[in-house]
Image (tube, rainbow, N blue to C red; front, side, top):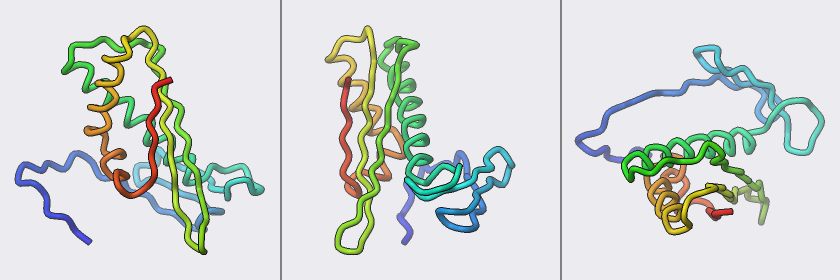
Length: 142
């Protein structure tokens, strides 16, 4: 399914990976920077799993979105800013789905300013835009 792109669309980057073996396989990026073993959640093996990769990618992207928003708002983010992402893999009626939480710590920032930052970052972050309306998401300021 393809979505019509806005007229001002500009391609910034295309990630390319090659994966074999599914959840118990390997995945490598075309530029060689990513080369990971995969293991099923809770199962044997030393690899990561897709849910961990998704949590890492989303939290990193969301923090960068917060940085961009903070620059526009002329707010200095603390170096202790941190995001703990939790991604649940759930099965119900023979279907699998995800549920996620972003627990965001922004010390030394007023609560109202922190809430505005998070709300605006949620509208900017590509991961948030991709998941909105598709999975149950909770964003908490902690």
